[in-house]
Length: 82
Image 1 (cartoon, rainbow, N blue to C red):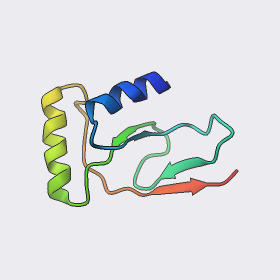
Image 2 (cartoon, rainbow, N blue to C red):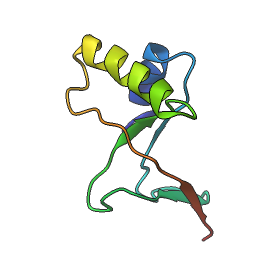
Image 3 (cartoon, rainbow, N blue to C red):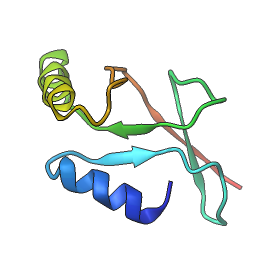
Image 4 (tube, rainbow, N blue to C red):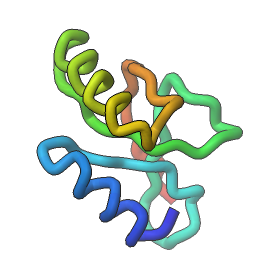
């Protein structure tokens, strides 16, 4: 994912943090995430603290029809030091 693609998606969700896998391509510390398949990249959007908040954002996302495979997951970011 390019920075432009990330920014374009972030514009769709101005009130929520958008994050994505980066495949450890840079010299910065890298993040991995729990509850995902490490074989696949993904784009995530922070959907709130409760299942109800997440469900509302998922419904909004489904109406956009841009992300048809969107789903709700409980995840944690894990900082991996080089």
